[in-house]
Amino acid sequence: MLSLRELDVFRRIMAHGTITAAAEALHISQPAVSRMLQQAEQRLGFPLFLRHRKRLIATSEAQALFPDTVAAFAALDTVQRRAADLKAGTAGVLEIAAISAFANALLPAAIARFRAPRPDVVVTLRATSALDVATRVANHQADIGFIIDSTTVPGVSVGDLCATAFGAVLPAGHRLAGAPWVAPADLAEEPLICLGRHLPLGLLAMRAFAEADVPFRVAIEVTQSTVACAMVRAGAGVALLDGLGLMGAPGGDLVLRPFRPAVQVAGRLVRPRHRPPSRLAEDFVAVVRAVVAASDPGLGVPRRPAGGTRNGGSRPPPQAPVDPLA
Image (tube, rainbow, N blue to C red; front, side):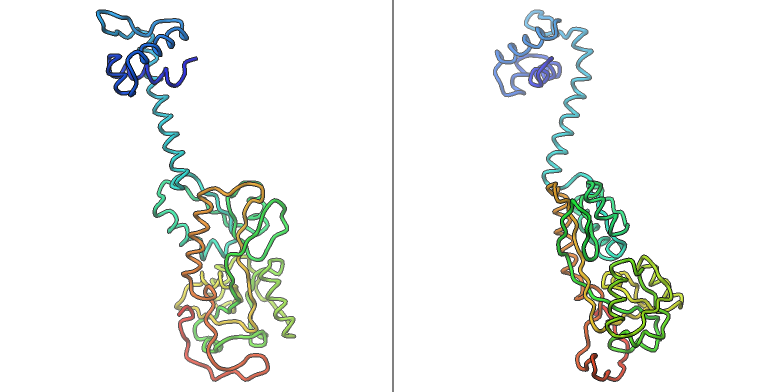
């Protein structure tokens, strides 16, 4: 079996034609090249070159080995470049799993910003349930995950990413479109569109109505915020979503209003517990945090207007609709 160094000597002699030129290309002495060539021929059991008047003439065996040798070093160069790219975080594959609220709101901008200086990185984004997100990270099917609230799936660690709050999505012209905020009592007689009661956001909404002593009557139950917004646009009712879902709500024909009393929602990062994060995963998290920091306060939830109280106080007079993301 030839060593890599002996193969390199053989390759250089074939390319340059003489031991002198090969030695110069390798930055070693001519005796060292001659010695390694002799060792290679002894290992192989046949000559690679014939010596004729201080010239080297490649044998048929050498000519047969040379194309494969060139291909082997080309592959080695590719491996070295790829390793350097991986070390620098400029190449590879990044597997992301996220609930649809993240996949529709923060992650598209983060992925675009992340790949701009890393065009050779392939990103896979799977929008799925929170349980599946955590399971994929635990099973090493995803490098990182994004969920709401927390998870009981073993084998993962959960960290804070952002804080959001509930808001209402209303059709333009709705009776509550000019209100500074909406409360459970305001929505008691409205066809309510909400995320499933088995989901963390659905449970939070149900608890908010219960604490306000208002019946929680859901007219349409969905699993994705984009579907809820489409329902509102179609005139099916009003939707109650978290800040991430509100970020994905297009403007124009929809109006966003804060929900009172405030319902805080935590956006979380999910990482594998027993595996160190990849360079790509860590760099992507940094980009996501930058996108979060650049988002408007509350991640799509309108700022609370000045003046007035909501618990036991009176609502200030309705105001003209304002840009909820201003």
